[in-house]
Image 1 (cartoon, one colour):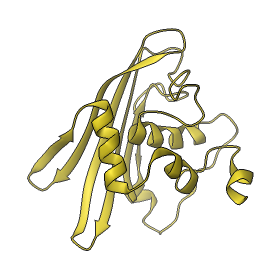
Image 2 (cartoon, helix red, strand yellow):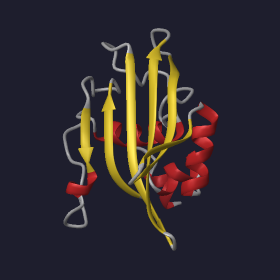
Image 3 (cartoon, rainbow, N blue to C red):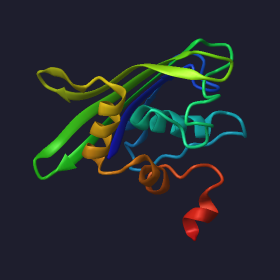
Length: 161
């Protein structure tokens, strides 16, 4: 899986829409995420996981407390590319959430989209179907994804053992 573009708004420290263009970041083949404690480095990884699976590893019940306290909505969109013997294909996963309590949120929109030269093709638009499409296309459930692709903060020792 090759990351292409991440859009996030309302997640933890990211109140306003932010776009991370991985294609430009990866032009030299490698990039890093740097910054002081609390600057939102882990939140970028949370945004990718939230887009892909509809929940975050380090949040209670997967979504509790993930929304910025000053916002009533949260949106994530993650575009990625998969390459197989048939060639490269691009997909985008979009999810939107609204506040339902002090710490709780509810998923309002979920979409798994194939991006083609002829336009976008929505392959799934229900919460469970979107997650199933992600799992089928990348071949990883959330537990495997967070262990192999996005190593959660504080889990490095577990990864080593």
